[in-house]
Length: 126
Image (cartoon, rainbow, N blue to C red; front, top):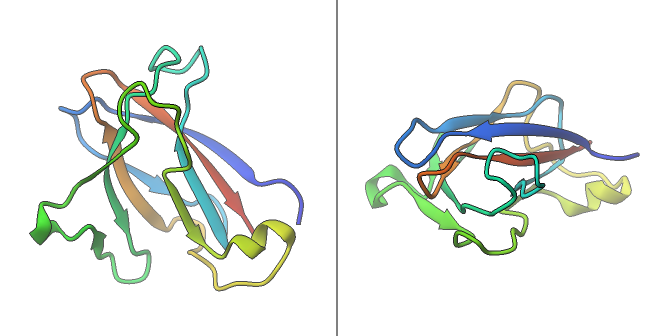
């Protein structure tokens, strides 16, 4: 199967608009986590993420908009962990699984949890 495709996506600060996380290929497994490298927009300090997962088939949000619509992942300053793992983790080892979505599918809408912009690393496995 090979290595995942990695995409770096900048996110707005908490007062800004959500940024859509869009797949760049057909993916069976996707990981999304905050990037805390020294050169990232957050200066190497985790800001935390807020937003929604979006079902690429029906567009429904998790958590639902009726329930406030947002969750928070990783407190500011915490060591980031994969915020999401979407799909079948067996795809990492070349196993089969139902695709999360195809190229162009929107799987999340995110922004920073603080007034400092940040970015995420999206790893897509086929």
